[in-house]
Image 1: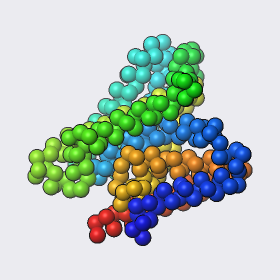
Image 2: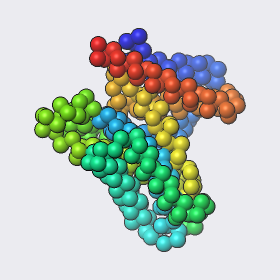
Image 3: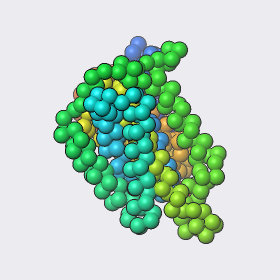
Length: 312
């Protein structure tokens, strides 16, 4: 059981790779397909990696999917309706995402509202802002091919999305593992009260984790809009489920029930490989939903096993 809590997700991933490679060797087990998997999972990985930081601190953020949807819609509106330059529009939208995260953090840490309730509430407010801004109608990008090139372009044959994903993962890994702030976040996750007694600015650190999570969700929303070439009202809502699945799966990869950036990457890869493999073998679309649901249950179970044995 201890092995499952530490290597369960990797075992699931390796098993799927073997099975799908054996059943579809000419299509699944190719360099091109693995590059497509990485490209397709890039945006979700960015959002899930951002979510990992509040999870490390023992908090939840249920607003990330709604923030991604709103920011994706808003950046298209700023570009098409307001004719703002691309860098300015992106900076404004990412800044708004950061502010939403700060608000989440203040409500949770300063006011003392449970993170589950607080982020669900702010997420619902963001949905309202989304519909108020768009009227519930998708927004079309009327110009700026340069904007769509952000997501669909390539550098040296490598898709931009993969490069951006790698950059974000490196930055978040460094923050969490090579900075004093990262050590504070980990300490809060173990025991907020003990961290406070040790002189850690607990409230500030929790606010920072929510700000990072929401910033990553905003970046994901911008990249999603660039990839689609339009702003869709609910395009990012699904990131909430997939991000939590990936993070919990990642907690059963290499560490005993601990959330960490590399683990989240492995978790997203596991979900992406499963969906890609099911599509390759021609499985009905409903099987992907069954797979996602079962994987979430498995992820929480494996994470729980890891944490139980990690404390033992």
